Every structure is written in C-alpha cells, then in structure tokens.
Image (tube, rainbow, N blue to C red; front, side):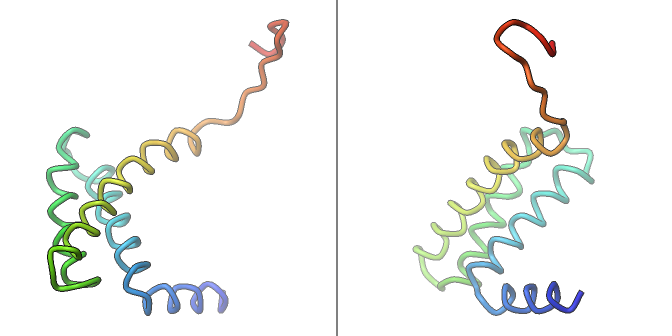
Length: 99
C-alpha cells in the first residue's frame, strides 16, 4: 500500500503525468458515468485537455496544443484498452478448434 502512495505522489509532482491522469480521469468519468453518447465525449474532453495543458504544462499556445493532443490520445487509447480488459482472450486455431 505504501508503494502505491509513493507512486501517486511521484506522479502528482510531474506536470506531464498530472495532465495524463487528469485527462484520463475526466474522460473515464464522462464516458462511464454521464448519459452523454460516446460521440459527445470529445466535445468535453478536448477543451478540458487544452485548458489543463495551458494550466499545467505551459501558459502558451504550445501548452494548449500539448493538452489537446493528450486528450485526443487518451480517447484513442481508452477505445483500444477497454475492449481488451472486458473480454477474456479466445484462442482460435487454424483448424477451427476453439470457435
């Protein structure tokens, strides 16, 4: 338990990791706990990522771009990881065994 707390404290000291965790948390919350359809999530997450990038990384256009790119990357990463975590891997042999 103590190792997890140290890991989180280290992540919160780094603004890049803080941006990563904040965008991931906001995206997860909006996607899973709000009645919004999935195609509306980018409309919320992209401006939030830009604002967080400006606040956490750098108070400039570059910080906003980094935040926006991080938000877009998180959306794509979430769409790839979620199906993998929900299903158990199925092994299908070339001769059809296991289908």
